Length: 147
Image (cartoon, rainbow, N blue to C red):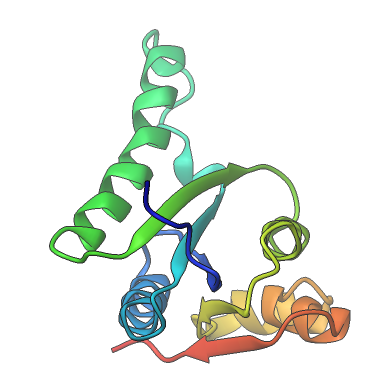
C-alpha cells in the first residue's frame, strides 16, 4: 500500500491560461516535492451552457461541468503526481482556503490575475481572490504568471 504524500499543494483551476500556468507550476513542484496536487474548481457562470433557454440546457449542464475535470486530467496526463479534483460553490478564496486547511497544504497556487477592467474592479471591490487569500494570512500564496 502506497503512503499518501506528506506535502499537499492547492491550485485554483478554471481552464483559463493563468490557471493552466498555475497547474503546470503545481505539477512541476509536486514532482520535486513528492506532493499531492489538490485542484480546486469553483463552479460559476462560465461552467453553464451558453443558452439557458434551450430545451437541453439542464442535460448540458453536467457535461459542461465535467469538461473542466476532463481538461484538468489532460493537463496531468504523463505526470506521475498524485492529485485530487475538488468542485466547490461560492466564494473562491473561501473554498481554496478550506481545502488548504483540510489537507494542511504547504501553499495555494493561483494564476496571476487576468487584468483588464473586470480584474481592476474585482480588486477595487475587494473581490480579488488573491487579495482575499493574502488578507486571510493563513496559507502562503504563490501567483504564477500566464505563459
